[in-house]
Amino acid sequence: MGNNSTGTRSASNNVAIGYGALEQDSTGNNNIAIGRNAGQNIESGANNIFIGYYAAQNIDSTASDILYIENSSSTTPLIYGNFSKDSLGFNGSISATLDSSNSRVIQFIMINLHIYSHMTLLVLLVMIVVISIELVDLYT
Image (cartoon, rainbow, N blue to C red):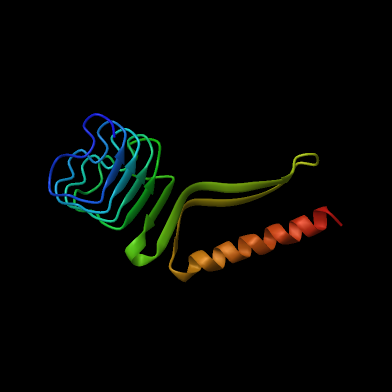
């Protein structure tokens, strides 16, 4: 959907929304690209998800199993994942505001930190426990 999105090639099961999204995809299958020029240079890569304006525009043309969320052509996306390795990475910080009336904020700084494999689940569980403790403390 959008000018120059996906070509009329042998690629199949792709979803492209935005001008130039998956524009070069000739044989890659099962890709999703949302945003102008998202995944533009993918030619044969498969099973990718690209979200954002120019997200993964300059990624390797054969990249596969990638999650890439960014709002520019940056090579360090805000969120990056590799489905085949069960890895997820963040470039930035994550924060949750618990109660704006007393400015209680939990902030998890994760600059260029890549969380791999089972560590993802462990980190998420720790975050849930910390937030739960803060909420219990807040409302008791």
